[in-house]
Image (cartoon, rainbow, N blue to C red):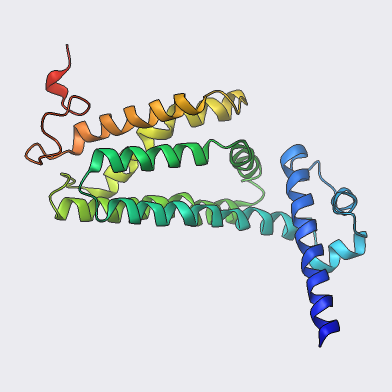
Length: 229
């Protein structure tokens, strides 16, 4: 029994080493530029060991891409925990927006996004699954949270699904596209990302805040009537 457990532990360690090596190779050289021989060398295992765990490069690539969707789990939980019972939408949305923006602007996440897009034609099902398990789950959770805030009278959100799209669009459109098209993965400092997150929330609340809500009154950050024309 002890020998069997040890064999399982060694096999699991090799499996993880292969996945980590392949991730580095795919992100640095792309799908076409990566070979199974190179993955084996980086993982410090034999080529046959790689094929024992993954039947071919396509399966290995698919496994790695789909495994990254677990990174969204934390964001999905954070959205629900932060917003569903919120009585301070400005503060809670700012905290959520900052976490969301900094997570998606991480260099490895940007490289993975480019990798999936670059291979979308050859892996259409993979791209669709990655979107559904990641970005679409975030939008769905935001939709549910905005619906609850509307029901509680904290925000005025007649169309929660559109509101979720507006929130993400205002937040991500410029920084994400700038990083994707220019290749500059460090275009924004932490302070710059926080500032963008705060401004995105202020713009969002101009559309969806409830004027009668006590937290919406006398708030220069969200009250457009106090701004000079």
